[in-house]
Length: 126
Image: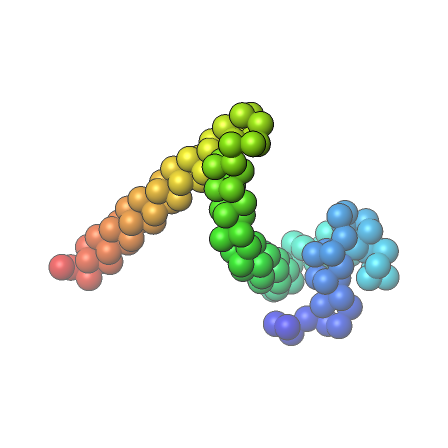
């Protein structure tokens, strides 16, 4: 992992799994000051961020696998006449909020793509 020592690699794993730097240091066998120093080191910090990014990507993937089930549950509650009105309203509100957020994200992504294309064209003299 980017020329890190085994202890630094262990520290990265501990930083990801432990809630505090102190606990990560204890788990690693390094001092808290050492962990802080390593975090200021460019290659260590880059490896740490890449590891965090990979974990977040895995988490997002796991969440995405359950979205259909979540939407179906909300639909069931929303359409269940026997469910309390407050539950049906909350389910409907959640569906609407998520739909609007998804639209906003798609719109923002399209705008960013347009800006990136424009910047690329300007840089290339088009």
